[in-house]
Length: 216
Ligand code: TYD
Image 1 (spheres, rainbow, N blue to C red):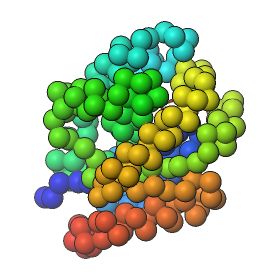
Image 2 (image 1 turned 180 degrees about the horizontal axis):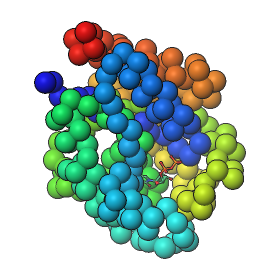
Image 3 (image 1 turned 180 degrees about the vertical axis):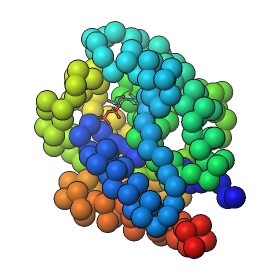
Image 4 (image 1 turned 90 degrees about the horizontal axis):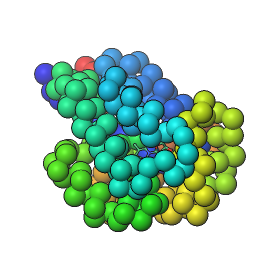
């Protein structure tokens, strides 16, 4: 059996990742490809507990370094206990955020530096990265407007100031520029259907051969 494909969706607040993840999962299932949907921070019972510590409470609850360490603690659990086993058994994995969020939020947003986050990545996960990363991009004001009232108390990051969100958006765009073979930037200001077809086109462009081999 061949290994599954690992796809992460990234972007700022309110970019519509959850809707797009559901839609991508449906399209894969429709052509017979088993897949799981998961998220970060979180994805295992322990990592979900760490998530609660991260997404709730005061903006100043954690220092940036503690925040980065908690993100990678949660990620280590998730990768070893869920993502790698799923891929090894042939499932595709669609993940709502992954390590690029740590580079954009903790590295660039909080100013720890992309290199410190890369070092943490190497120590905890080695070279393990998604096969494709879709960066859903939209202006910060539009994204924050969309998230109003939808956060179920998980608003610690949304409450950070606008300049933090602007740095983070630039962060994602620069990650995509530096990793053109892995990342695709998707214009998320369009309708959900248009964004979904764009995402599907990118998946077919990159994995079309694998898909026709696995689903036949
Ligand atoms: P999420 O629930 O995906 O929020 P959203 O609805 O905006 O997609 O993620 C929770 C928050 O955690 C989100 O504001 C971004 C932040 N985050 C980081 O700061 N670093 C990380 O490595 C990850 C995975 C998330």
